[in-house]
Length: 309
Image 1 (cartoon, rainbow, N blue to C red):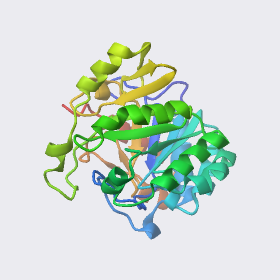
Image 2 (spheres, one colour):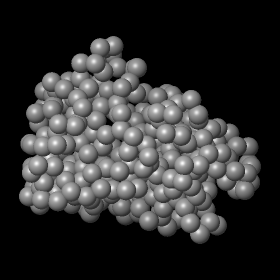
Image 3 (cartoon, helix red, strand yellow):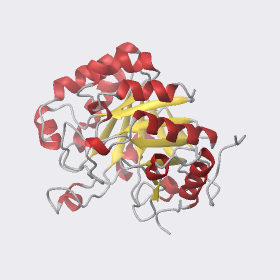
């Protein structure tokens, strides 16, 4: 076992692993990438996910995040969390749209989940229905409050900012988070070729520069998360806002410490690239040794490059 984090060739430590365990979802958000659709019968099993996490732990990874699609679509989600928790990571988190969270929150907490991020772009029902193409706002809010109740702390709300859709709703979302002891994350829209409207990216991408400048002016304190892509956190009136800006942001890539695994079991070295994936799951299914799997992981890590190179 390595005593320190394994690092890529740019000396960036690999601290966390984000595993997409399904790309099935009960919503159909207008900005969703729908990358590499995988049939439910071909999804990674709980034991395969456990093996991936075990190898990551040996290489020094401290944090695991489960994502989708929506991970709660999987009926074995509690089993998956239990298996990962047995490896004693520093932090296990999950990203969800919250629709099924009221049902699963307590079981996930008992299984060893530490916290959740909930994708919620609006508190307005009509806007919610436009963005998600569904009418689950009440269910999502109930799930969020249940997560707070059972102690999946800190609950973070991921709000993708879209021009002329929700850019004027940040204040309302901030107070919703503040009043319920949650953290608000404002996320810059990433371009996708899979949106229904080809003009979507051009029409709705909203640069966060001006918003971040306003936050800096009114914040009581500003801190930078060095090993989380250099994100800045703004503390305002006992509330907290974090900015996630992956677009045209050299600091985001320079300070990235996260590796990813796709729904079909490939190592994804970089968030914004799909041309340097490394096959992993077939090697697990072929019964290759842990030492061989470690080499595959390290190959994936060595494939990491800043997006703008």
